[in-house]
Image 1 (cartoon, rainbow, N blue to C red):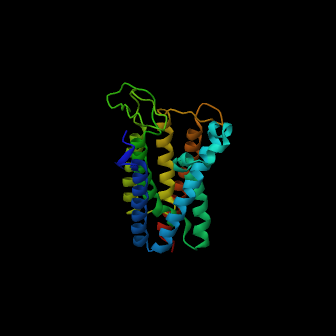
Image 2 (image 1 turned 135 degrees about the horizontal axis):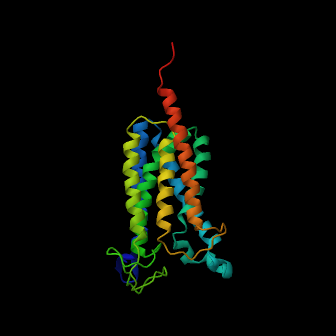
Image 3 (image 1 turned 90 degrees about the horizontal axis):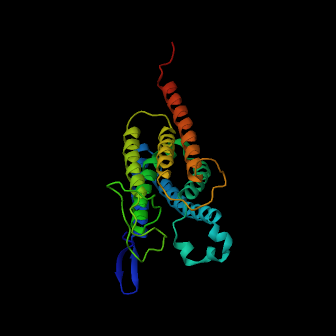
Length: 264
């Protein structure tokens, strides 16, 4: 664990914050490049990326507050600096950002599916870099394991609640590696002929499957209002994977129909 990148006297620079900022900048840079290549208005695309980041942070905290019993027992904690600095729950931010993006794209008269497609690789690599921030901060930790690549946190200054001195699955790194592979796959996909909506559909499908699997190795202390054999995050992952799979299949069919030669 390396929670502080720099510390001078009372001033400290958190590793998590630096990596999240880097994730946002890399994702926005990549998306703007893809927008130019696709012939979309890069200024409006960059604005959309900034707005989605802000909305995403809000959604992540809303979901965190809604699911954490600590906030129900002590509602005053909602308005503390610790809550403001916390990352929140990714799915809450991602889903709210998707909803906002849909209406913003339509309001700006951008092509909805084509715009979502160029965001998909940036979301993947940005989230992957963000998971490196989780690893540095010691949050989102995995279950105990004795595998050779297990990681053990020792920093006594940890505030995330990560167990110290116990070998754990590096689930943050699993997800970061998986997101990197998804980003590379989507970049190759966008360089070939494809139907609009296929890239974002594939991202939702692939990330849903990745997150569903990683969740089996993560520790959980949040409530699950849906019940059943899976965690809340796994149910959401399955929903995203299903939706993404349907979207990708429909986009492929639409692309195949456009590619078919007209009958004489």
